[in-house]
Image (cartoon, rainbow, N blue to C red; front, top):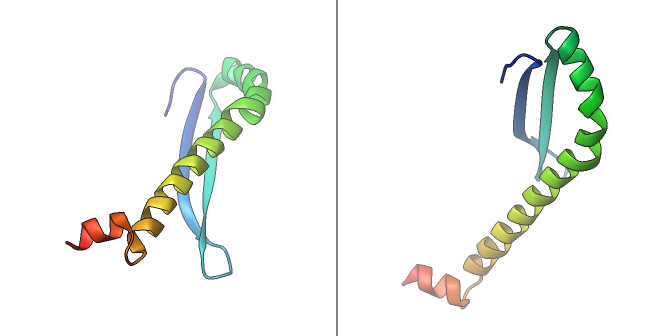
Amino acid sequence: MADRTVHAVMHIGWVEDGTGGYRGQMAVLVKPNGLFGALYMAAVKPFRYVGVYPALFRATGRAWQANARERNAAARPGSEEGAARTT
């Protein structure tokens, strides 16, 4: 993304966690665009850490848990969802 205030790139990926599993990792790289961009970034920084990032992680976690429950239910023999998928 690029506009009058910043140039920004977000990367979300899976990283091995050392236990044979993976964890999500997000990186946001931001370069202020001029004086206005630097002032803007300084002004919004507290809101990103207090509101935006925690809300993003909570929503991602809820979606992940819901999908994990569906995958686990489908994988269990004799489960209603698993039986529906095998027939």
